[in-house]
Length: 138
Length: 138
Image 1: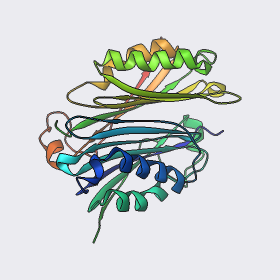
Image 2 (image 1 turned 90 degrees about the vertical axis):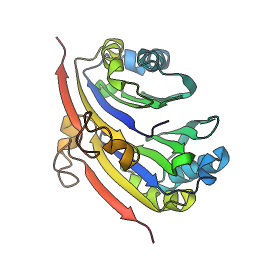
Image 3 (image 1 turned 180 degrees about the vertical axis):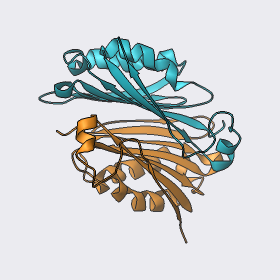
Image 4 (image 1 turned 180 degrees about the horizontal axis):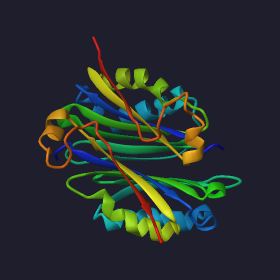
């Protein structure tokens, strides 16, 4: 497999505080995100913190997804790292809906060996450039 | 807890191909990395791929660590995402040694709510700036 990886770093703001404190709902959101990008799940671990907050990771055949929630701030941090040609951005609309988020910020970083990244100049001009987008939801 | 997170994105090149294809050794390297930064491990999942490669994540009370290895390329991708004031860079020397890596590239991204990130101007001037360093080991 080409080592080229696309790593989406996403922050979700203004989320529903009860939803993102519920381990089962957060887990479903992340597993659904893996499904949305066409990934194959090979492992997972989730943890509920006291007094609040959920953390979890899903290992996929094409790398991983992670989630960390701060219910007291309505904030959720998500990573989606994909290889094998999968597009991590396909997961964002479903996560926005599942987390009931009012805005998000996404950054994308290319990972891998320099020679594999250099072959992808149509995707990003440099392997250390990040792409940032800010979305406000109606 | 302050939402401010430091997310270290590290690429290790020229690694020992046998070492990074061994699930037990890769797992030990990542758990030791968690210990090196003073994190509390709360969950983990690791997977060995056929014909080669290992993926794994360690969920910590302060966020997570992840690892993906490409033995055929001598390449390993590591993420260390920490909150609560932990310094993810403290894990790099131990990972270099454990993976028998000849060079690495590290980028650091600040995560969290804009107001929490803005309070940290002494750490980084902007929440979308990344810090990149390239280390060649003797």
